[in-house]
Every structure is written in C-alpha cells, then in structure tokens.
Image 1 (cartoon, rainbow, N blue to C red):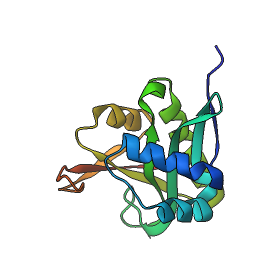
Image 2: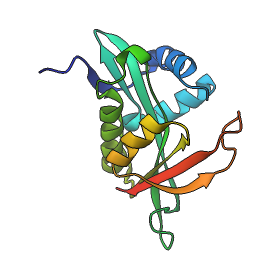
Image 3: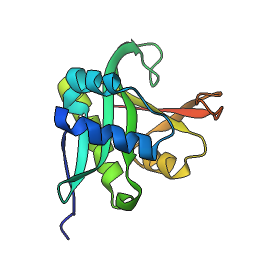
Length: 159
C-alpha cells in the first residue's frame, strides 16, 4: 500500500502553514522568528509532511553542544527535537513517526548529532509510546516545565 503523504525539507514559504499547525495543535507556541531561525540554521532537520499538496505536519530541530544526557561524562553534539505536530485528521498514519525518524537521521548526517533529546508532557501517553518505540528513554522529570504547570519528561537516546 502506497503511503498517502510525503516528507520533505521545509521551505521558507511553508512557515506560515507550519506556524498555523503549531498554534492549532500544540499549547506551546513560538514567535515566527524562532521558526525562521531554525529553518535557516538547521534546515536539513526542519521537515514537513504533505498530503495532497497540503502541509499536515512538521518537525523542527536544532543541534547543541553540551554534556550528553546519555553519557554524562562526555560533551558532544545533542540533537534537540524542539517541536513536532501533525494535524488531527492526519494522525494515526505514521506521519509523526516518519517525521521523527527522518529528523534523527538528518541531525546525525548533516550536523553530527551524537544523541537526541526532547521534552514531552507527562500526560502525552501517545507521544511517549512513539518515542519509546524509537529508542528514547526518560532521563528525568522537569517539574512545572510547561506554562500551565504540567511536568515534562526529558527523554533521550544515543544517535
């Protein structure tokens, strides 16, 4: 069965739609310049999913240089999955998993990531299940991480 979507690198003209999806799907929103900065600096790891020519999801990442969560005795390049979202009517089709998989590959290939990490709401069981399937483990709880006071799990895995 052929999949009904494609995943590709985001382009400047995609950002309005990416920002709209971010505002529609996620409670955590960023200013437009933040998306522009990540597209400019880490464009190979800023991906969108398209169905019938319409953007239905995205993942935005960056790579940082710091102590590794998966090896606290080592400093290296950490790939940070900053934001990922898929519109409700496109969920359950494997789009989020493919966006994540392709972003992880890009962060390693183009930016030298040695590990990956992300933050996720402790209540977001669906996302946590996907991340665990992709090899992520909970490193620690970040108390009151979100604006509404909910805790986050910091999850990480080696590249």
